[in-house]
Length: 165
View 1 (spheres, one colour):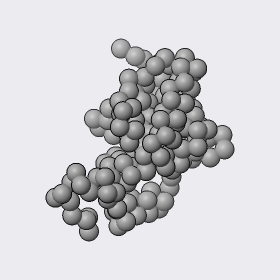
View 2 (cartoon, helix red, strand yellow):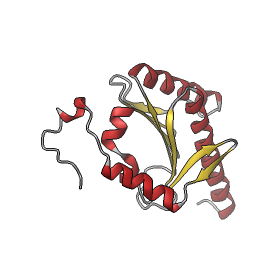
View 3 (cartoon, rainbow, N blue to C red):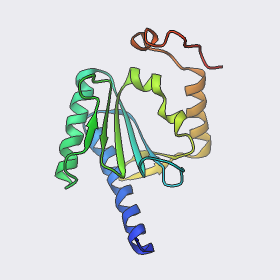
View 4 (tube, rainbow, N blue to C red):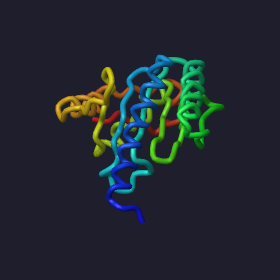
């Protein structure tokens, strides 16, 4: 059983690694980078999620490969991963930090921001992660609700889709 000191050290390490991952994907020109702090979310599969968007399948592959290299360079080894073949949503699972590299179409479709809206959201600014204030988070979630678009490749797969109101 971990003592309080060990838990605090592990939490600080996880947060620092999430910021490191966000910086690594930013270095590969990923966009719309968000860090979700899932610490207080019951049933969360990780402590932190890092989400980013890419504009092409080639960029999804490059950002994912760059993140994998950065993780290895940081001593994390190779993550468990999925999605390399489709190049729409690559998941790199470092256990306490999970990096989601999305093609913009897939991110628009799956909207993890809505699914994990109980989490605290952070953006990266200069040398730290900045917590999104409640107004900015609400505006982001409302924008997702009101401006959802279904990319053609997903519209074909979800014939029963109706726009959220």
